[in-house]
Image 1: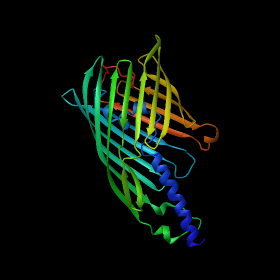
Image 2 (image 1 turned 60 degrees about the horizontal axis):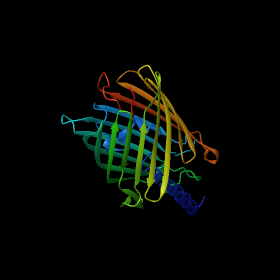
Image 3 (image 1 turned 30 degrees about the vertical axis):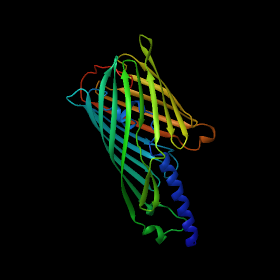
Image 4 (image 1 turned 60 degrees about the vertical axis):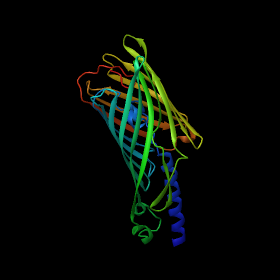
Length: 309
């Protein structure tokens, strides 16, 4: 194949990756209720213990170069009960792009009514890596791509949020990443305040019997570029000790999902979620999430609708 056709193929792959990177600026999570620090820095300390969680999500399973996300979060309250700190690390891979972000988190909390109102800030660095040599061309051994360097770019980012939680319900508002970076050259990006996302979410706990509870929740993601995405969830929690939780979800992008969480003991819980497009959006094998949480304590004392006991 001619060099010009190879360049056209490269440009096409690059544009597709850039579009996916925009969609992945704030990765989607089905289990956002159990991964609160990933969407709102004000979540830090709300579990009142050392809380650590990992989540892995692979999207559009049978499409080459599809997005995948690994998240680690940890947070705990300080000796001053009004303050809490945390650490969030996110590794996001889309096509030839890999973005790794590490952020420190600080939250200040005040009592309000029966619950607490928390304000949070986070700041850190994103490392974007572009590996052009991973592009598969029609013509093998093309020197244009085999000799391509691995480009690395460090970029700062900040986020903020507010979170109110009380026995039986919660509501949050956040901007996880205020800065959005667009590529200027192969290894250069330009920051802008014009494409950040605003997240508004909440949920409530409703006892329906002596052995079950109902937990409806919703998340709205509004982009400053006038995009709107809504997630609606309906979860059922079963006794004894609320150890099993199952639910269904629907995303306005015509995606349905199902999830389940099992509390192995008061310290450890595991979860799994699956989602699949509907109609014309059903063009892949779906997306999968695996979740694990560990809390350094033996017994939960404060009820929080994000995590049932």
